[in-house]
Image 1 (tube, rainbow, N blue to C red):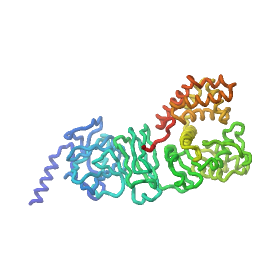
Image 2: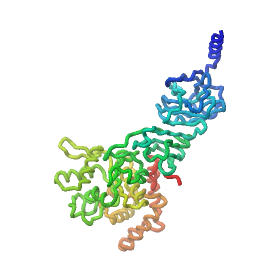
Image 3: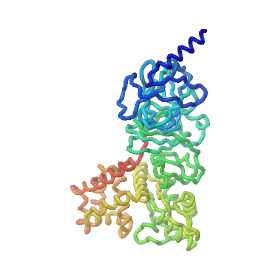
Length: 511
């Protein structure tokens, strides 16, 4: 009799529910999509929901979660706005709309909190529930949001990662600066950018088995994925800050490490132990490609003795193919490192072979820096060379820079040709001039550009007084044009890729 009364009570309770909501028992065993209500009008609204209807999943009976349990929420698809956990103590906003479909997030709370449901918004045309909910024992790893600290996302590393070499790829877009703790030797600041960023985090450098990221409310997009550390010489994933800061002891080869730039994976980055190692890879190539008086010539090892290449390098596929094709045709004796580079370029699709065995250029670029440079110069060189990589791989960027160059007066272009020619670049190569023009302007902050060039042009006037009329057009009160040019380029870079002159980095150590 008692069971019959209970069943009748439940039956009439469900019948009397508003047509604007539905109640469901929590699923205990597996993820099962729960139904969606119609727009709910009885709960207070905390934010405007524009044209997307408000919906609710209500638990019947309400969940009383213990401290060793988790409410696991799987997103079947991306929500169109924030979600709210409805509890007996009020509503808690969660930024679930930042996560891609398929993500599982474990909600944890203190013992005894009563969870009544989840309120969210979604496009009216969507079919089926976007959420699958399960109440389980709290798992040992995964993504966690505490209802006591809903603006901090925790990533608990799987046990097998703690002493391994796997790489965690974090893709993130945020309207606010984020703080990442638990990795490396200091908290990391992740700068807000208008576009998504891809960061590589090495599990072996963790200080903790829990990484925390906050504030979650600033996120526009986030995803975590795990990938094994590739075997040498397959390039490692890397952002520019990690390339600069990686300890040499972590390298897979004692003389150099090779990366692909996360956000531009066709750009390969060589980090060399010293200038000697870098020279064996790139010095002969630098004279072949861009050195005034040597372009197109393969210099022997003896001819290279005493010649200076560059302290950092950049090369496009077309020049790499021409260099190696000529060396193969002539059976020219190259350093072992140069042949290693050719094989790496082939295995990464920057070069291909046609049916006759001739190397043909594909998409990409190669850049390099060396550990022998000071930290300040390494950072400047890496930005300079990275901008060349962007120039080589983006026709849109090349066209934009060319328009700025063409808008210069002939006097200003002459000043640039003399300045770059003094460094050893071939002034007769117009594309090289345009490429170096942008790289020298973005290697430091825009507000530092005028002072940087003013000092150097004045030094050139002292060395070449006969060029005073040409060079003085960029000094003193006329040096402001360098900042203007840099800002023009910087605005385009920021809108397109979220990077700025002097700042191609996404991560910074918090002091």
